[in-house]
Length: 147
Length: 182
Image 1 (tube, chains in turn green, yellow):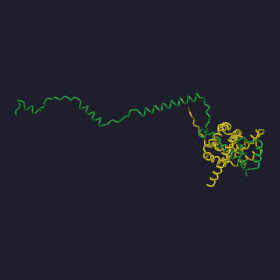
Image 2: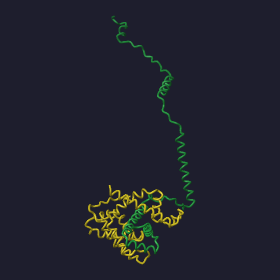
Image 3: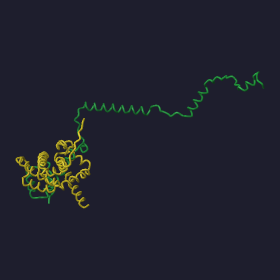
Image 4: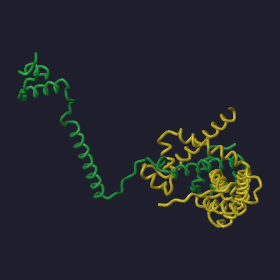
């Protein structure tokens, strides 16, 4: 049966932080104890998986705060670019919020306006056509008519 | 940019090998890591294993045995790497490495299940612990500088990481026990 001290020794072996004296005790343990050998393989499996996930990409990357090593001038340039972008966004927002409202024309009002305009137009001249006389009537009215 | 479409013929050995290798590499790496001193030695062994496995892939009759077969190749490469580094500090004796490797090769199917369970277990960790673990294991991360940023000693940070790993191990055991009952 392994105790916590044995497990810690295995962990230090995996981390490469084990001392020379302790290493001899670890060798004895591993030579005699199958459970210790199995635990070494199991702990190695955990370490390999953590390595794999940590190397897999930004999704699994460190999120601990890290001190910035970027030069001050580069930070200032980044801030200026961010401020310019913010100003552009605010200006665009202001324009869209306060531009004159477009309203739909009222059909009744439009119709009345057109009707008034037509009414104000000058009246058309009256047609002066000659009185129409039918050919029969004209013949009857003739002096030469037998009737 | 012009792109070309590659048609892979059915039963293409290269494609078969790559599929198998990609699928089982994480479990194999976990097995290898237990037998070597650090990550760079694990890289070395994995590279050699992948080359030898590719060269001999045509001799593997039963592809279902791929994990155990590659573990057997890796065992040989682990022992070869151990001999190359034998004069360095903190190298486990060969008989111990052989025992860890032999038992580990038999456990390959379990290793895959453990890795799958780990995804959920890591996701369930409290946010701060998960972020800390992933930060510490990120490529190029330095425990010394991380400890300085957190205002802790290196030793206390190593202890904290050890507790997180042990917590994850308990979570794996609970998950696999639940799955075995279901």
